[in-house]
Image (cartoon, rainbow, N blue to C red; front, side):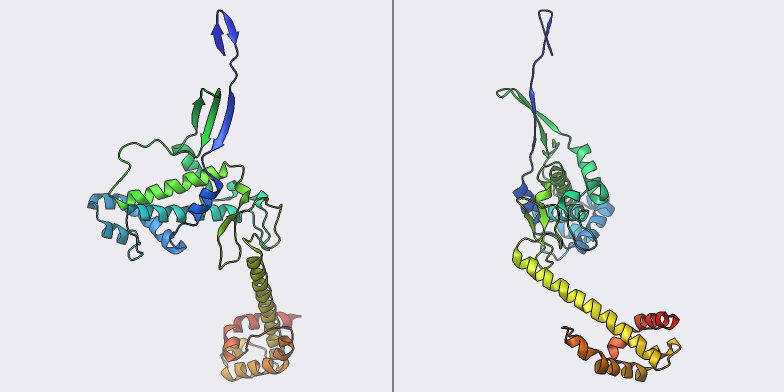
Length: 314
Protein backbone atom coordinates (compact mmCIF):
# COMPACT_ATOMS: atom_id res chain seq x y z
CA UNK A 1 0.00 0.00 0.00
CA UNK A 2 1.20 3.50 -0.86
CA UNK A 3 -0.19 6.76 0.64
CA UNK A 4 -0.91 9.39 -2.05
CA UNK A 5 -2.61 12.77 -1.20
CA UNK A 6 -4.31 11.26 1.79
CA UNK A 7 -5.60 8.33 -0.23
CA UNK A 8 -4.45 4.77 0.11
CA UNK A 9 -3.45 3.24 -3.18
CA UNK A 10 -2.88 -0.50 -3.51
CA UNK A 11 0.18 -1.43 -5.57
CA UNK A 12 -0.11 -4.98 -6.86
CA UNK A 13 2.98 -7.06 -7.48
CA UNK A 14 3.07 -10.61 -8.77
CA UNK A 15 5.10 -12.81 -6.45
CA UNK A 16 6.90 -15.43 -8.46
CA UNK A 17 8.84 -18.36 -6.99
CA UNK A 18 11.57 -20.03 -8.99
CA UNK A 19 14.14 -22.69 -8.19
CA UNK A 20 17.80 -22.16 -8.99
CA UNK A 21 18.34 -25.95 -9.20
CA UNK A 22 17.75 -27.60 -12.57
CA UNK A 23 16.83 -31.31 -12.97
CA UNK A 24 19.73 -32.23 -15.25
CA UNK A 25 22.18 -30.36 -13.04
CA UNK A 26 21.13 -32.47 -10.05
CA UNK A 27 21.62 -35.65 -12.08
CA UNK A 28 25.07 -34.49 -13.21
CA UNK A 29 26.12 -33.78 -9.62
CA UNK A 30 24.86 -37.21 -8.52
CA UNK A 31 26.95 -38.86 -11.23
CA UNK A 32 30.21 -37.15 -10.25
CA UNK A 33 33.04 -39.36 -9.00
CA UNK A 34 32.58 -39.71 -5.26
CA UNK A 35 33.93 -41.76 -2.40
CA UNK A 36 32.79 -45.25 -1.51
CA UNK A 37 30.15 -45.37 1.23
CA UNK A 38 32.58 -46.85 3.78
CA UNK A 39 35.37 -44.38 3.01
CA UNK A 40 32.98 -41.43 3.09
CA UNK A 41 31.54 -42.49 6.46
CA UNK A 42 35.04 -42.71 7.98
CA UNK A 43 36.24 -39.44 6.45
CA UNK A 44 33.07 -37.64 7.56
CA UNK A 45 33.59 -38.74 11.15
CA UNK A 46 37.27 -37.82 11.07
CA UNK A 47 36.49 -34.43 9.51
CA UNK A 48 34.37 -33.40 12.48
CA UNK A 49 36.83 -34.91 14.96
CA UNK A 50 40.03 -33.43 13.54
CA UNK A 51 39.05 -30.09 11.98
CA UNK A 52 40.52 -28.06 14.86
CA UNK A 53 43.63 -30.26 14.99
CA UNK A 54 44.21 -29.76 11.28
CA UNK A 55 44.02 -25.99 11.57
CA UNK A 56 46.60 -26.05 14.34
CA UNK A 57 49.08 -27.95 12.18
CA UNK A 58 49.14 -25.58 9.23
CA UNK A 59 48.39 -26.47 5.58
CA UNK A 60 49.81 -29.91 4.74
CA UNK A 61 47.79 -31.83 2.14
CA UNK A 62 49.40 -35.20 2.73
CA UNK A 63 48.91 -34.97 6.50
CA UNK A 64 45.31 -33.79 6.10
CA UNK A 65 44.45 -36.60 3.68
CA UNK A 66 45.93 -39.14 6.08
CA UNK A 67 43.99 -37.77 9.05
CA UNK A 68 40.80 -37.77 6.98
CA UNK A 69 41.36 -41.38 5.90
CA UNK A 70 41.65 -40.32 2.24
CA UNK A 71 45.31 -41.08 1.59
CA UNK A 72 46.08 -43.05 -1.57
CA UNK A 73 42.77 -42.29 -3.35
CA UNK A 74 44.30 -40.05 -6.00
CA UNK A 75 42.76 -36.81 -4.76
CA UNK A 76 44.56 -34.12 -6.73
CA UNK A 77 43.67 -30.85 -5.03
CA UNK A 78 41.09 -28.92 -3.00
CA UNK A 79 38.62 -28.73 -5.90
CA UNK A 80 38.80 -32.47 -6.52
CA UNK A 81 38.12 -33.22 -2.85
CA UNK A 82 35.22 -30.77 -2.76
CA UNK A 83 33.57 -32.42 -5.79
CA UNK A 84 34.00 -35.92 -4.35
CA UNK A 85 32.50 -34.89 -1.02
CA UNK A 86 29.65 -33.09 -2.81
CA UNK A 87 28.82 -36.22 -4.85
CA UNK A 88 29.07 -38.56 -1.85
CA UNK A 89 26.94 -36.41 0.45
CA UNK A 90 24.33 -35.68 -2.21
CA UNK A 91 23.97 -39.37 -3.08
CA UNK A 92 23.49 -40.29 0.58
CA UNK A 93 20.77 -37.67 1.03
CA UNK A 94 18.98 -38.54 -2.22
CA UNK A 95 19.17 -42.31 -1.58
CA UNK A 96 17.74 -41.94 1.91
CA UNK A 97 14.87 -39.87 0.57
CA UNK A 98 14.24 -42.19 -2.43
CA UNK A 99 14.04 -45.20 -0.13
CA UNK A 100 11.12 -43.69 1.81
CA UNK A 101 9.07 -44.44 -1.31
CA UNK A 102 10.06 -48.13 -1.41
CA UNK A 103 8.33 -51.01 0.34
CA UNK A 104 9.91 -54.22 1.60
CA UNK A 105 8.69 -56.16 -1.45
CA UNK A 106 10.55 -53.81 -3.83
CA UNK A 107 7.55 -51.76 -4.96
CA UNK A 108 8.40 -48.10 -5.49
CA UNK A 109 6.01 -45.13 -5.36
CA UNK A 110 7.63 -41.75 -6.12
CA UNK A 111 4.60 -39.85 -4.82
CA UNK A 112 4.94 -41.39 -1.33
CA UNK A 113 8.52 -40.26 -0.74
CA UNK A 114 8.63 -38.27 2.45
CA UNK A 115 11.50 -36.07 3.59
CA UNK A 116 10.18 -36.16 7.16
CA UNK A 117 10.70 -39.93 7.32
CA UNK A 118 14.44 -39.48 6.85
CA UNK A 119 17.12 -38.94 9.50
CA UNK A 120 20.13 -37.38 7.80
CA UNK A 121 18.33 -35.71 4.88
CA UNK A 122 15.92 -33.70 7.00
CA UNK A 123 18.79 -32.46 9.16
CA UNK A 124 20.67 -31.35 6.03
CA UNK A 125 17.64 -29.34 4.88
CA UNK A 126 17.21 -27.75 8.30
CA UNK A 127 20.87 -26.78 8.40
CA UNK A 128 20.74 -25.35 4.89
CA UNK A 129 17.56 -23.40 5.66
CA UNK A 130 19.33 -21.71 8.56
CA UNK A 131 22.47 -20.89 6.58
CA UNK A 132 20.93 -20.12 3.19
CA UNK A 133 17.68 -18.18 3.58
CA UNK A 134 15.43 -17.51 0.58
CA UNK A 135 16.50 -14.57 -1.55
CA UNK A 136 13.98 -11.91 -2.55
CA UNK A 137 14.62 -10.40 -5.97
CA UNK A 138 12.94 -7.28 -7.37
CA UNK A 139 12.20 -7.02 -11.10
CA UNK A 140 11.25 -3.42 -11.89
CA UNK A 141 10.59 -4.07 -15.57
CA UNK A 142 8.03 -6.84 -14.96
CA UNK A 143 6.75 -5.35 -11.69
CA UNK A 144 7.43 -8.65 -9.98
CA UNK A 145 8.84 -9.81 -6.72
CA UNK A 146 10.60 -13.14 -7.11
CA UNK A 147 11.62 -15.54 -4.36
CA UNK A 148 14.66 -17.56 -5.39
CA UNK A 149 15.18 -21.03 -3.86
CA UNK A 150 18.54 -22.78 -3.80
CA UNK A 151 20.78 -19.75 -4.18
CA UNK A 152 24.30 -19.72 -2.84
CA UNK A 153 24.76 -18.10 0.57
CA UNK A 154 26.40 -14.72 0.80
CA UNK A 155 30.12 -15.41 1.24
CA UNK A 156 32.39 -13.58 3.60
CA UNK A 157 36.17 -13.53 3.54
CA UNK A 158 38.34 -15.37 1.05
CA UNK A 159 36.47 -17.93 -1.13
CA UNK A 160 39.56 -20.15 -1.26
CA UNK A 161 41.46 -21.84 1.56
CA UNK A 162 44.68 -23.81 1.69
CA UNK A 163 43.10 -26.26 4.15
CA UNK A 164 41.57 -29.45 2.73
CA UNK A 165 39.18 -29.47 5.67
CA UNK A 166 37.63 -26.27 4.29
CA UNK A 167 37.17 -27.95 0.90
CA UNK A 168 35.54 -30.88 2.69
CA UNK A 169 33.15 -28.51 4.46
CA UNK A 170 32.31 -26.66 1.24
CA UNK A 171 31.45 -29.96 -0.43
CA UNK A 172 29.06 -30.86 2.39
CA UNK A 173 27.33 -27.48 2.34
CA UNK A 174 27.02 -27.48 -1.44
CA UNK A 175 25.42 -30.94 -1.36
CA UNK A 176 22.98 -29.81 1.34
CA UNK A 177 22.07 -26.72 -0.68
CA UNK A 178 21.42 -28.65 -3.87
CA UNK A 179 19.40 -31.29 -2.04
CA UNK A 180 17.30 -28.57 -0.39
CA UNK A 181 16.64 -27.09 -3.83
CA UNK A 182 15.55 -30.53 -5.02
CA UNK A 183 13.14 -30.87 -2.11
CA UNK A 184 11.61 -27.48 -2.94
CA UNK A 185 11.14 -28.34 -6.63
CA UNK A 186 7.97 -29.43 -8.38
CA UNK A 187 9.88 -32.06 -10.39
CA UNK A 188 11.44 -34.02 -7.52
CA UNK A 189 9.23 -37.08 -8.15
CA UNK A 190 10.92 -37.42 -11.57
CA UNK A 191 14.32 -38.13 -9.97
CA UNK A 192 14.85 -41.90 -9.81
CA UNK A 193 17.56 -44.48 -9.39
CA UNK A 194 17.97 -47.60 -11.50
CA UNK A 195 17.28 -50.57 -9.22
CA UNK A 196 19.40 -52.91 -11.33
CA UNK A 197 22.32 -52.98 -8.91
CA UNK A 198 25.21 -53.19 -11.42
CA UNK A 199 23.86 -49.95 -12.95
CA UNK A 200 22.44 -47.88 -10.04
CA UNK A 201 22.56 -44.69 -12.13
CA UNK A 202 20.30 -41.72 -11.47
CA UNK A 203 17.91 -40.57 -14.17
CA UNK A 204 14.76 -38.51 -14.80
CA UNK A 205 11.33 -39.91 -15.61
CA UNK A 206 9.26 -37.61 -17.82
CA UNK A 207 5.95 -38.79 -16.43
CA UNK A 208 6.43 -40.85 -13.24
CA UNK A 209 3.67 -43.36 -12.60
CA UNK A 210 1.91 -43.83 -9.29
CA UNK A 211 3.93 -46.95 -8.50
CA UNK A 212 6.39 -49.46 -9.95
CA UNK A 213 5.95 -53.07 -8.88
CA UNK A 214 9.66 -53.91 -8.94
CA UNK A 215 11.20 -50.46 -8.62
CA UNK A 216 12.38 -47.91 -11.20
CA UNK A 217 14.77 -48.78 -14.04
CA UNK A 218 16.62 -46.61 -16.52
CA UNK A 219 15.85 -48.95 -19.46
CA UNK A 220 13.92 -52.11 -20.35
CA UNK A 221 17.10 -54.15 -20.57
CA UNK A 222 17.99 -53.44 -16.95
CA UNK A 223 14.40 -54.15 -15.91
CA UNK A 224 14.68 -57.57 -17.59
CA UNK A 225 18.05 -58.29 -15.97
CA UNK A 226 16.73 -57.33 -12.55
CA UNK A 227 13.65 -59.52 -13.01
CA UNK A 228 15.83 -62.48 -13.99
CA UNK A 229 18.09 -61.90 -10.98
CA UNK A 230 15.05 -61.72 -8.70
CA UNK A 231 13.71 -65.00 -10.08
CA UNK A 232 17.10 -66.63 -9.53
CA UNK A 233 17.27 -65.36 -5.94
CA UNK A 234 13.72 -66.53 -5.22
CA UNK A 235 14.46 -69.94 -6.73
CA UNK A 236 17.60 -70.23 -4.62
CA UNK A 237 15.79 -69.13 -1.46
CA UNK A 238 12.93 -71.58 -1.98
CA UNK A 239 15.44 -74.32 -2.79
CA UNK A 240 17.39 -73.67 0.40
CA UNK A 241 14.21 -73.87 2.48
CA UNK A 242 13.21 -77.12 0.77
CA UNK A 243 16.64 -78.68 1.33
CA UNK A 244 16.75 -77.64 4.98
CA UNK A 245 13.34 -79.15 5.63
CA UNK A 246 14.26 -82.35 3.74
CA UNK A 247 17.47 -82.63 5.80
CA UNK A 248 15.53 -82.17 9.05
CA UNK A 249 13.00 -84.83 8.06
CA UNK A 250 15.78 -87.24 7.16
CA UNK A 251 17.35 -86.79 10.61
CA UNK A 252 13.99 -87.63 12.19
CA UNK A 253 13.73 -90.75 10.01
CA UNK A 254 17.10 -91.82 11.32
CA UNK A 255 15.85 -91.36 14.87
CA UNK A 256 18.09 -88.39 15.70
CA UNK A 257 16.86 -86.90 18.99
CA UNK A 258 19.59 -84.43 19.94
CA UNK A 259 21.91 -81.85 18.40
CA UNK A 260 25.06 -83.95 18.63
CA UNK A 261 24.72 -84.94 14.98
CA UNK A 262 26.15 -81.48 14.11
CA UNK A 263 29.58 -82.62 15.36
CA UNK A 264 29.49 -85.96 13.54
CA UNK A 265 31.27 -85.60 10.18
CA UNK A 266 30.17 -89.03 9.00
CA UNK A 267 26.53 -88.23 9.79
CA UNK A 268 26.75 -84.94 7.91
CA UNK A 269 28.37 -86.65 4.94
CA UNK A 270 25.60 -89.29 4.83
CA UNK A 271 22.99 -86.54 5.08
CA UNK A 272 24.51 -84.67 2.10
CA UNK A 273 24.59 -87.91 0.07
CA UNK A 274 20.96 -88.64 0.91
CA UNK A 275 19.87 -85.16 -0.21
CA UNK A 276 21.75 -85.63 -3.48
CA UNK A 277 20.05 -88.99 -4.07
CA UNK A 278 16.44 -88.16 -3.11
CA UNK A 279 15.90 -84.40 -3.27
CA UNK A 280 18.32 -82.73 -5.69
CA UNK A 281 17.16 -84.65 -8.83
CA UNK A 282 13.57 -83.38 -8.61
CA UNK A 283 14.79 -79.86 -7.77
CA UNK A 284 17.01 -79.81 -10.87
CA UNK A 285 13.93 -80.28 -13.03
CA UNK A 286 12.73 -76.91 -11.66
CA UNK A 287 16.00 -75.18 -12.49
CA UNK A 288 17.85 -75.52 -9.16
CA UNK A 289 21.58 -75.80 -9.77
CA UNK A 290 23.32 -75.73 -6.39
CA UNK A 291 25.46 -78.66 -5.29
CA UNK A 292 24.98 -80.18 -1.83
CA UNK A 293 28.08 -81.49 -0.11
CA UNK A 294 29.15 -81.90 3.47
CA UNK A 295 30.25 -78.26 3.71
CA UNK A 296 26.69 -77.19 2.78
CA UNK A 297 25.34 -79.26 5.68
CA UNK A 298 27.94 -77.77 8.02
CA UNK A 299 27.09 -74.23 6.94
CA UNK A 300 23.34 -74.75 7.45
CA UNK A 301 23.46 -77.08 10.45
CA UNK A 302 21.91 -74.51 12.79
CA UNK A 303 18.90 -73.97 10.49
CA UNK A 304 18.52 -77.72 9.97
CA UNK A 305 18.56 -78.32 13.73
CA UNK A 306 15.92 -75.64 14.36
CA UNK A 307 13.74 -77.18 11.66
CA UNK A 308 14.23 -80.66 13.16
CA UNK A 309 13.05 -79.39 16.55
CA UNK A 310 10.07 -77.67 14.96
CA UNK A 311 9.02 -80.83 13.07
CA UNK A 312 9.57 -83.07 16.08
CA UNK A 313 7.08 -80.96 18.09
CA UNK A 314 4.52 -81.32 15.32
